[in-house]
Image 1 (spheres, rainbow, N blue to C red):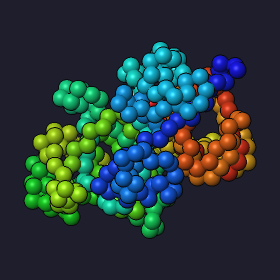
Image 2: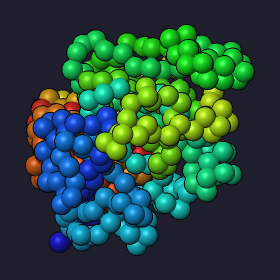
Image 3: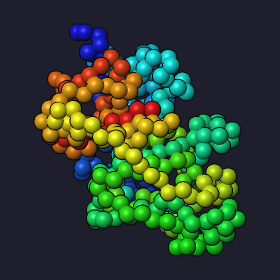
Image 4: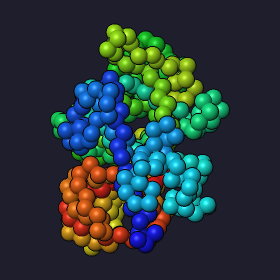
Length: 323
């Protein structure tokens, strides 16, 4: 088999992530085999692209079948671009898809400078593509009203969250890009994809005093919050870029220093030219094909640097990210 073709499209395994805000609903939308020991009704998130050394995505086809994505990067980094196109010496992004059966905690993530200095890892910026909402329209906690750190601290410690927190409307198909340090919380009933820099750190500001299965409240991280929160909050603005490949509409949501994210809406067929060193992809809905491979909702795969272009056919939506 031609080696470029064999390594051009790598289908990937999914990781199952439990959380206090999960109820297994994501598995009804995107079925996946549950590992032994994982409680189905606690699954909140499916990891669909990860180079984490402990929990990597596993390649399901081709030359690297059965190998973790982190090992693929170590053995064949050219699949992720040339030396000038790669950064951090590791896969710099991860992607998950989840459903919130409860409100997520009010939280922030560390900035790059803070994380490198104090946590021994990179910081976390993230973005969301909203796949669906249980009740339309919905809303999301995004930002705050405080003008100074002292004001922010006072309202947090007095739990004046009605005064402090800002909310925005949210609906199916929306996109949000968050800098590290942004106060945020996805709300109950939201199905989403998160593309983020490769960092697992979350600093909780408030968790509604809810208790886990052991009857304990989850810890807050207020000192770290105060060291990282962006003040004042600046509302985000977007300049989406649209283009057409025959019967494929591409929407580029963002192309920033952390990641690039786009959506392909396929209604027929078309040939797409790869414009980033690689794409990490997830089929959010529908079915079709990429070259000779069948696709359906829930499939996750990587388009490597070995493919200069590829043909998409069918009726489906695919989110594609690069970092």
